[in-house]
Length: 210
Image (cartoon, rainbow, N blue to C red; front, side):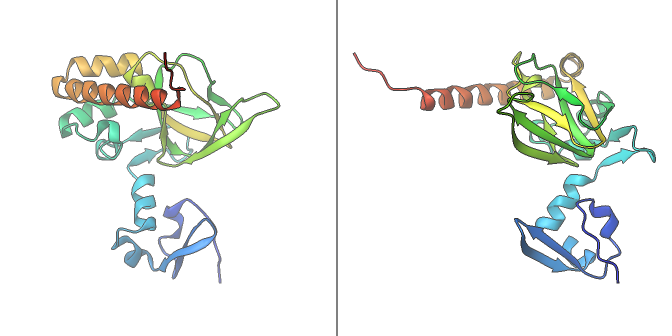
């Protein structure tokens, strides 16, 4: 009998029984085929982790165009635009403890995790350092870098060796200049995010009166 505990779902395809845990509780338990036939947590995690071509040594990766469609920012792009966009991503390898970017520094790239784990921190390197999130295979971060000239609101640091795919804002803008439909879609998203941020800022502000 072999008992395997993993978040890398490719390794459990041939298991007789797959038990899916969420916050320490069993949410699904079945064969791979049955779990994939339903739209449950396992199926969602499987879809998130796939759509990447990673080299055998894990040092480089590529993202497939159909995987980009599952990222909300690119969800309305047509197939041709997604194919062109996929070629603009560059593979990077982060060593254990390496920082992808620091809180408050200018934002210039968007990242997708092909393989590995990163931690999102506030106050990194200070006595008050706090981990606010852990991101793994298929997760993405830093999308505001593509929408506006902003600064990072957190530090992202690799936990173990991590392979990421990055999209530079300059390369993204060059891509948009060749795809009018994609540019229109992104402009709409940027306007929506700007309105949401303004609303959130207003909610946090103290009301004033004369």
